[in-house]
Image (cartoon, rainbow, N blue to C red; front, side, top):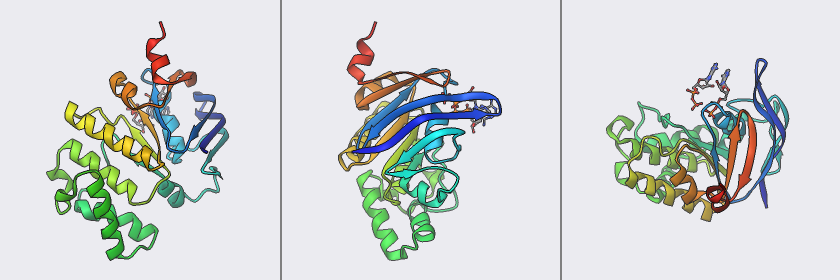
Length: 228
Ligand code: ADP
Ligand code: ADP
């Protein structure tokens, strides 16, 4: 089934065309990697999915809902989780409280239920033992896992990752590969912006290759990496 549908999607910053009439669909549980040179529009594209950047024209449909000016942002951002490059954890909150804040505020989940759910997802990403620590006490890879658990607590259909391997050592990279494979097995759709070809080859069902705001190619990784 189709989770994301992109039709003639364009994004302008003033008169600069950052995304130029993109068209593609993504299936439920699919793992998409977005590759392309710096400045090609990769971050802009994933930021349109949670409306950190509103698109300028064309249409974007996620899980059957048209995303536009009338879309409720708290609802959209629950449906589309994002793991930022610098993780964006709340520094003054413990790991557990980072995970329970949005469900309690946005979904009115009780503290008890929110903490149960947080422990469940912190366990899934193998970081439960740090639940009472603060972000500054954790390594980059640990903070990233907290950011993933925090997003999962909103039960998203789609997860966005901006350069998830940029600050990680090889062991942590294989950790994030297995987490993303786990998410796919649960039917969560993932889109990942990266520069790492090895990572892309390992996790992608399909690779979107962008240049100057356009999609040059959408293809499974074996085809992509064997092209001359
Ligand atoms: P990538 O993620 O592929 O490096 P970006 O999506 O960050 O590319 O940027 C695409 C283009 O849009 C770049 O030329 C960048 O300078 C420009 N751009 C990105 N954000 C803004 C902004 N807020 N205002 C103006 N131009 C922007
Ligand atoms: P990334 O490539 O990961 O998006 P950048 O360093 O290009 O990171 O962008 C960081 C921030 O600066 C983003 O919020 C982006 O929207 C903004 N930005 C990028 N390029 C421009 C630009 N040409 N003019 C204004 N803002 C920009």
